[in-house]
Length: 330
Image (cartoon, rainbow, N blue to C red):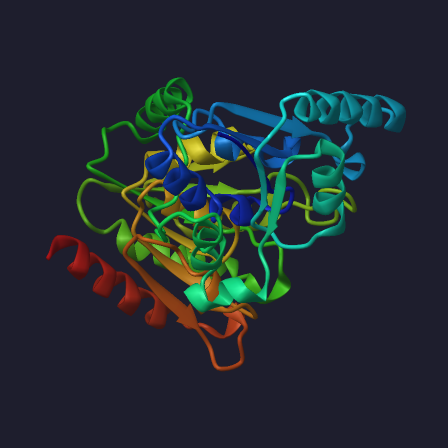
C-alpha cells in the first residue's frame, strides 16, 4: 500500500499530524508512507522513522532573494509529476479541505482521497484526535500516539558544547524559555520572562536557554524579537542564561532537545517541545487549549479569563511551574 499525507500549513499543524503517521506505520508496517509539505516546515519531518520519503515545495510568498516565481512553480510541477507517477492508493488531508491541498490531491490522482471533516470530531476536540480519526475511515484501528520530531544529533551536540562554553560549567538542568509568539494575544512581557529566569535559576546547576525568532520587531517581512531578547538578557542580571536565536527550524528543534523542561506560548515551538517529550508550562492567549494544547506530555496551561497572555502574572506562572516539577518528580 502506498500512502501520501499532505500537510501544507503551520509548524504546529504538521507536528499534530505526526501521531497519524506513526499510527499508520504501526498498523501498516510494510506500507510505503510519504509526505508532502512546504520547505518552511519540512524540518519537522526530517529523520522521521515512520516515513519513507518526504517531498517539499516552496510557497511563492516564502521565496528568498533571487528566487523567481517561475522557478518555484516549475519545481512544484516536477514534484507533482513525480508523485503522480507513484500511483498512491491513498492521499490523506488531515488539515481538512484546503483548496490548495485538494488541488494537489486531484493532480496526484490517487485511488482514494480522504479529507478530514466534521465527522472526525467524534474522536475528541484535539487536533491530534481528529487527525487520527482518519485511521478509522481507512478501516484501521483508532490510535493517537505521541507526536514525533527527531533533532539533528550533530547540531544538538554543537549547541551543548556552546552552552557549556558560555556558562563555564556543565548544567545539570537546562530550562528552555521561548519568548516569541506570532499572535499579539500570546506575547508575555520581557520583564516577566526575566523574572521567571531569575527565579528558576536559583537552583544549583540550573541554567536557561533563551530562544527567540531573530530580527528586528519593525522588519515588515520577517519581524523578530531581537530587542525583546536583549531586554530579557539585561534584566536577568548574573543569572546563567544562554542566548540562542533560532535562524532555522533545525536549530530550534536541536536547542529544544537539550532542555529538561520548557516555558513557551502556544505555537510551533510548544508543539515541537511536546514532540520532543519536554514537560512544559504553556501561555495561552486567544486560542483553545482543548484543541491546541501539548499532546501526550506533562504540562500546565496558563490562560486568563480575558484570553490575553499579557494578563498573566509572574506568580501564576511560577505556581504552575512548581506543580509541573512536582508531577515530574513524583
